[in-house]
Length: 196
Image (tube, rainbow, N blue to C red; front, side, top):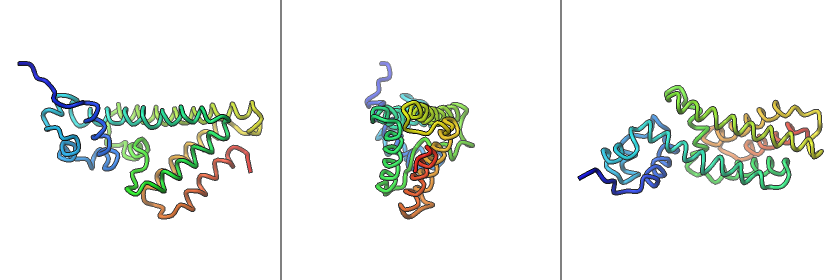
């Protein structure tokens, strides 16, 4: 009789994602993953592959359902400046509400890239570059609309916005106990856009 899986792979990947998000790749043991998914080790491996493969699937799921969905939603905000402002307000609010201090799975992975495969490194680089490009597109559009001064360099400002986003996510994970610093960091986005 051929092997038949008795669990939903997408659900298992979702639960594994939560473990990796909280503990990181190195910190997540196979026992943690088995306990979280409720799937025996061999069945999990048969369905999704080894720990590295499961991590890649979890990271892709996060990227699609969290980062890409967020950027799509932000594009519908109306104006470029409002979209950027909404993003930074949301990041600070999420950080304040994140009692487990999980932060952003993509940024967390970027901080531990040294121990990862080339595939993971590529996924992280592509995700962050897509984020930077998103900012650049909004800034360029904002300049055309007259919301952002013409002298603002879209590429440089986009890189700066990405750095602020990453900084907030990192600081919120433990280096900052209060939200005042996070709000001050978020306010720098407006400075980069040439707005008071």
